[in-house]
Length: 230
View (tube, one colour):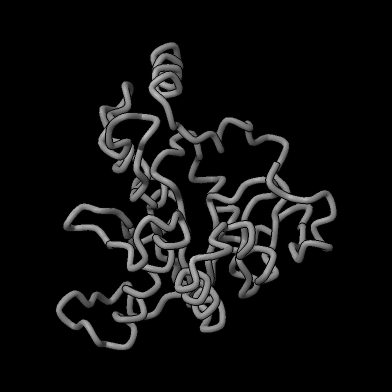
């Protein structure tokens, strides 16, 4: 677990069960796949690994999960030419989130009309998923969206930093920009504490392995062996 027992003391508000209200028509969530990690333990680019059962790459699979959760537009933060590059390189997930928000702000303000698209002109926030979390399900991601529609707070699951909903708010963007510029307190946990994040208790029917990250060849082999048996 990443959190203190008393979430209120740390500035994180825990919610025992998320409300299942339908999405508002004005609530536009943009998906973000974090794919800029070094993949040091894996020894190769994790985003290009292919799942045994579908032959999809982990990147394609992650994009599909977000789309199936109801997200219309999915961005990818990474190092490839077609992806959104970190403005503050090698600074972890926060840098990828910052880069995506910066890109969307450009779209919103019309400063980059060549890459502009209708889906990104008005957005409520980012639903952020790491590329190496293939067991997560669309229904689990929908829980985050459902809770996010009811306020303007960061929303994540208790005990897990990712996936996470990041609202588009000027003060939150300023916070992220400042900590990256100062190169300190870069963890998502610190952002949750400083910005009064909402923590959703993980429902009992969600298997713990949904939140597993695939970091090593051994974990990758175990995942694919399970897919074959399944």
